[in-house]
Length: 263
Length: 369
Ligand code: SF4
Ligand code: SF4
Image (spheres, rainbow over the protein chains, first blue to last red):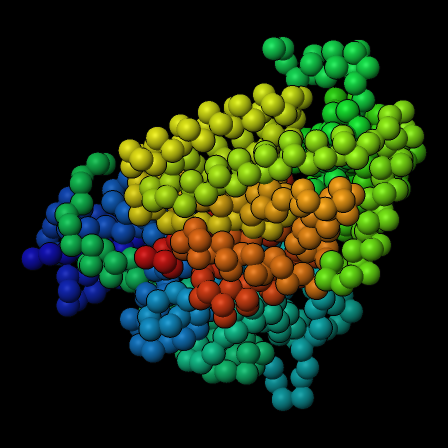
């Protein structure tokens, strides 16, 4: 039996997908201080359930932020390529992928399942998972409630202008002191992030169907803001978080050749 | 010979005059015909930026901040030893930089027209070139004769032809030289004291490369992705993106920008009155400060075909508005005309975004698989 794996080492989490041509198994863990060891430990655990060891895998493709630092993965591919492939698998026929991860945001346009064009945010964290997290913490939300956030009828989102994490945080605190509700402020933050991300995505002329992937895809409130600003419906596959590792596993599957054990 | 600075001092001691310029619009024939040494000062190093920022806004193009930082602190010997600086009104940032520079240096600024398409643009530029000739004669105490101009035209045309020949060898697959080596060579050309020495050196390199091509040897394996780099000047010290492209396994087979081939692709017409011929050659340079700038689009489309380019990378400095806007025009043009993948990289001279650029470049290359 041929078994392959895709390992997506992101800035905050590590995702592993194991695939044998029929069944797919996904697992996630926090990246922690030593992503390379964490990735290896996670992979070892997952393949054990298949009654094999890492060395028995026919191919491993690494992707994501930490892809270059995975000695056991024979071939690194960028998260752009892998996310596109994973999104196409999760939602066949997808034309645009919006992926928001811990520290970056990207928009990819596909044609016939292949990357045609892409854009990525530059240095700053605005419009990324990190930004959402900092703001949610500052406003006292927990992960679940911030993702489910919805305004009450008649309630209006605050307008947030700063997009630098530091400035936006003080702007949010300022609004709190002036008596605005955390909910309205957070809604304003989502609207601002959506503007930012869609402003970037506009460069590649996004068209439907649009798939939302990455860690932040589980945030329904942000998804709604994005889709409103985009004017298109956003599809969020249930395995959206694993799009990158799924893409990597599919490339590994195709690779055919057996990897050299060089760990 | 000794190091460049000692050579520079020696040349000055012998009474040689030195002219510094910041842009490929500066007519080098006139400097050569004035028996002076001409050096391109367009700095591309990160260190002087902090000094540049003392006088210039922070969100300025790094090329200008770096150039100015070098100039204002006497850290660039070529600037220090220049008897005259020739500036041009290319982008707004440079224009204003020259105003500040006039406080501590002799600067003559050539006023470019906004476009190079109409007859009156050419007439106007011709008068600016004439004026430069007079300024050089006066400041350097020389007379620039027809004969000397014709001679300078011949010398520089020969050099251009050699650069063209050298570059055309990069059409081979495998490519005989890396883009980084090509860049170093072109960059080195800016600091040449003796044009005939340089010509000899070029001849040697051309012969070597021809051998490599004949033997099928290359700097990259056959079939490596072929990239054309365009955009702002990316000289040695600011070659970050070129380096990343080649580290990712693709070959930079053509560097189109001003630190690359831009100045060598057209000759000065040797059969016309020298000043007119010089003026026309320089005005034809397709810089994004020209509005509109259709020649750059046409030229890149042709290069994509000639050099069998797999992808075009447009490098833009943060704060460079003309190239930044023109990037959209270029991307659209390449898509429609050549269906060539296009990647725009906006950056500065720092190293802080190297990994992000690497991801983008890698994804760009994966896109072509
Ligand atoms: S990019 Fe334009 S302004 Fe800059 S050196 Fe080239 S021609 Fe001159
Ligand atoms: S890169 Fe752009 S802004 Fe900078 S000097 Fe050249 S034209 Fe001006």
